Image 1 (cartoon, rainbow, N blue to C red):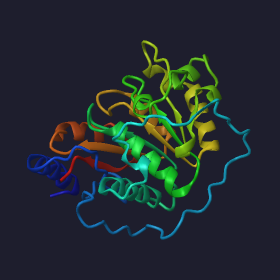
Image 2 (tube, rainbow, N blue to C red):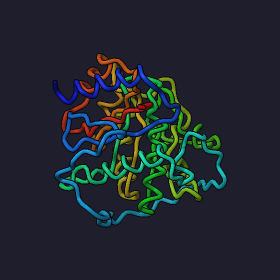
Image 3 (tube, helix red, strand yellow):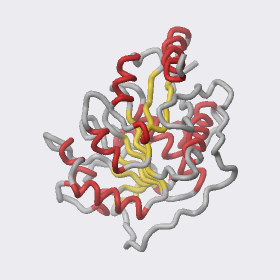
Length: 282
């Protein structure tokens, strides 16, 4: 039985036994296209992992972006468990996921990660939010979370952001990137919400302005996490994949079907696929 078959069988089996309400992050696989065991099992051996802190990231000489909006006291969704820096099991799983991403490929740093899922309701947006907050806490570095799911944007809701411009407004020329960025001061994280979504948002992702926007973000932030639309049958992930370092797929235990997982995998270039996050595992 292949490792992919293993994780698919485990997702179905555990979902039939027990569920937990909160998202539970799993692992990042050390090689592309091979899933890993869930976090309830012993950690996988990471033959290429590096022990210790990552070296500082050098940025090209680019004028600094100054987010126009600074928010204090935002009312975050209670499911953003890592915001409180607790020692809860779920929060620790997100921190473990953060560490595995950091050390996933020492030969090619994973600084920009796209997170998607086979369908809606898998928990990808909460995974994005919790992972971004965990990264900001651990390394005290510049973290940016981007809502690139222009079909059903949710990041502004879970972070309690006020209405304002976002990625769509930048791509359509209605706002500058500085005007669209929002910094949550107490959490040391910057968010680029989706903004005012037009009737046909997906076409915006393939524009040269999107590529330039990602280049600017890369120059200003140490880690960037994108929340993207479901991988299949939509084209959004394949459009965004060339702009990121790697892709993670969020799978919901006992809910996500095998065919939908296979469809999601087939829509992503194997060299870009970093691993899976298994949600609601026992």
